[in-house]
Length: 151
Length: 151
DNA sequence: TATTGTTATACTCTATAACTATA
DNA sequence: TATAGTTATAGAGTATAACAATA
Image 1 (cartoon, rainbow over the protein chains, first blue to last red):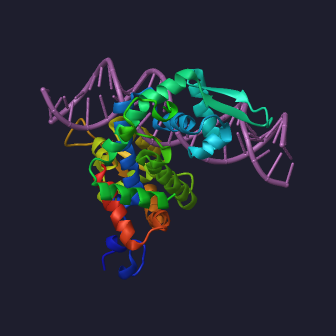
Image 2: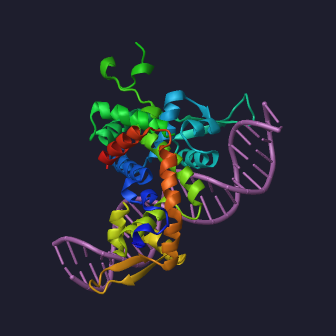
Image 3: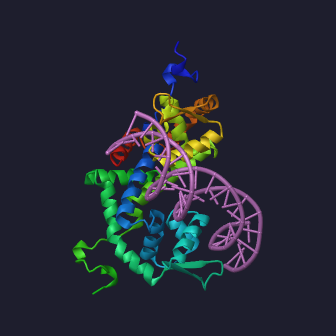
């Protein structure tokens, strides 16, 4: 009997091999890496994908409380705070107390931030296009709907 | 004319709107986040997905030069060095000079590392299963092949 | 009680650039 | 010349936990 081939003492019929390249997590990481490379090439190193999520979401929906902004961009409270702090320091977003709810901070794009968003939206769409370039239109739709099911 | 709706002066027919939730990069990040959460739940916080890539790849192919290991796990030289350093400090991998090529360092699993790999392979397969749980078998295959095209 | 946000802390991953050593 | 690896440096994202303020 080949011990090497069956380390876990499972019956051979149920033995489960592990090939890294077949695991969805590994392939997801590589796909996201590829996307990030394209993002940096087209958007410049000054904006990261995560920062762009905040900028483009504010551009889309307008001023927004910090926690809600985090939920809209898939970040927890501590993470979104760090991102907002860095963008505030650079004059891209600004914060103000919410007059209607003393707990809340309203985050919004500054004028500079709005301009930056306007200037980069076309490039951001190019990033999506470049990332999906290896796929046909049909495949792109399939991929997006499958990925959305994984959330 | 509605300026707000056409900030970029593109003709309306070609105007390109940007909805964050429709961008592949954003959805990829969320899918990878979900996977990482499941990974941490099932594997424990002591092993990250990136560290597991190194461990499982060494378990799969045996000792390997550091740079080659990086290529096999989708990390550049500086990144894989950091990961190998942390795993070395914890006694999970060990390094030794390559007798056949003075430039190279051979990285391998220690006995403790081999045991750790054996113990965690089943759980790692469970992570893949849990990540893909929302999909049918056919959908899983489709997703994997589409993701692989994006690399 | 639940929600919002802050702060402190820590770790990991990631990349670039300049460098040495060997093939 | 090309490859392998190191080092220094920097920044970003991520999470947890404890906490204060407000609804």
